[in-house]
Structures are given as C-alpha cells and as structure tokens.
Amino acid sequence: MDGKKLRRSHDQQAGKEAIYMVSAWATENQLVLGQTKVADKSNKITAIPELLWLLDVTGCIVAIDTIGTQTKIADTIVAGGGDYLLAFKENQGHLFEDIYCLFEVDVAHGIDKAQHSHAQTVNKGHGRLEIRECWATEKKEYLALVRKHQNWKGLRSVVRIVSQRNFCEKAETQTRYFISSLPAGQKQF
Image (cartoon, rainbow, N blue to C red; front, side, top):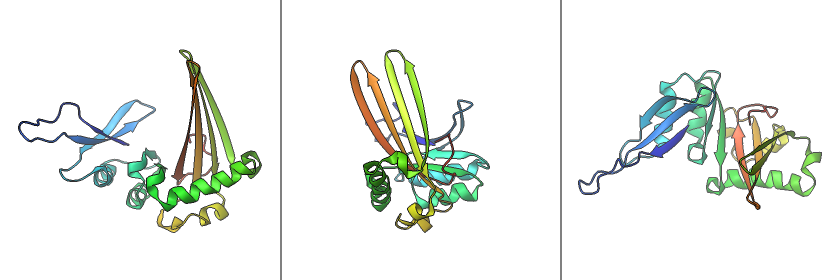
C-alpha cells in the first residue's frame, strides 16, 4: 500500500488543494486492487484502514512504508486475515531505537553468529549492481526487548535489510528495518 499526490490536481487560483490517494497494489499481478481518496484535513494514516476494510486481505502480505506503521493498521490487517510487513524509521521513536539496537549489537558481535534467518539477492543490469541482504528473527527474547511489543497485534518477527547499490563507480548503502506478523524464515522479506 502506498499514498501519492495526484499530479496537477490542485488549483491555487481556485483555492483547491491537491488530491491525495492511497492505493493497494498487487505486486505479482502489477495491478491496482483498490484506491481511496484521503479526506480533506486528514492524512494517509486514517485512509489506509478504510481501504483495508474494502479489500479481502485474507492470506495476503500487506507491505506499507513508514506512514502506515501504526498499531491500528496492524490490527486491521490481522483482523482481515492478512499478514503485515511494516517499515519504520527514526520517527517511530522507541520502536526504531529498540530494533536498531538489537541488530546493531549483533552486527558488532558478528551478525552471522546471531542465528537469524538470512537471505541475499544480487541484481545486475545497465551498469548497476545491487545486493540486498536480509536478516530476520522471531526469537521471543528479542521481541520482548521491544518496548510495547504487545501493542502490535500478531507481531512475530523483526527484520533488517541492507541494500548496497553500485552505479557508475558510486556506492550507496541503505539499511531499513521492519516489523512483521510473518515468521522470520520468509524469503519474501
């Protein structure tokens, strides 16, 4: 799921604000499953649950960027019979701090020794090389260290993905973190 502002949907002279939409996208089929307009004077956080209730998410994995990492949204997905993969950044306060620290302690001591599930993909093309590595764990002792973990309905695993991109002799590395209701061994991460 993702939200976007519709290009050229505003009219400054008439005082009309741009239109924001939230869309559910089926990655395998490359198809939009549903959309809802974000209400005026509202935001994507309130529109996402509305769209989720319109869809049958039974057996689906719902991935949402940082704006959708809300306990109410996780509740809605689980209540609908789906699983979630929710991204988060520093703006999620304790959630980011706790999971970042869990993984960074493992990195400092050799993450390969931490017995997390691990997967790697390598993509080459058009002068670009991209390597993604994923570590995930569902160890109870890790989850118990996440403050307010009990508020995340169905929380089963935490995930760290490191993307390394090499293009035109430039190298970029990005580390992202997720929470999920899926078991840690899932290659879909």
